[in-house]
Image (cartoon, rainbow, N blue to C red; front, top):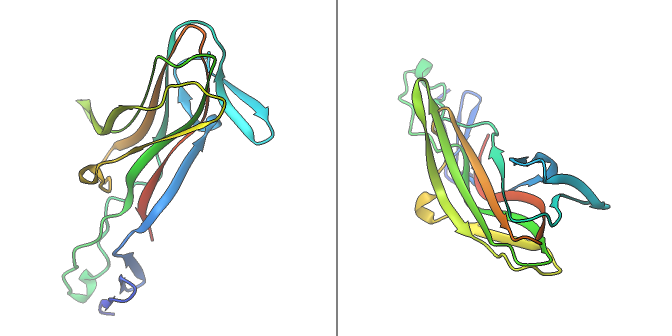
Length: 201
């Protein structure tokens, strides 16, 4: 069967391979407290109330915490539809996977302001017998550090030029919060996540 292009649906169909040209827009990925990696046992997974879980730290002195979520879902590296058996040159394929458009963290601060809070998104690529290569998609960016009664949802946008589908082999995306607390400060880290365009089929 020859390829059939449908300009209305923006899809290509070829011998049971369906490829979407345009991504779905503005998906949500949200990792709760139990999914977050942390570098300190001082951040304790706590059930504060029904439906309210967080990584908690009570006042205990000036400390720095690094918390991250790795975006380790299936990476789409591209595919070649089954055109060759019909002697047809395959057309260029659309990018696949996810394209991050912003990252966010949901948290509470108590007692006093934090010293600093930053949020970043990066990609680490690995290769055999080569030093790992870390690239910031968005560099560590200061977010609100003022303590208040309510919860913060702080978002950092990804510049349009850095929004791209990740198709780098042996690579891992991450979103990382770095919190530096003052001597009497407290923190509850509820979730880390992102909005993204995604193209799976």
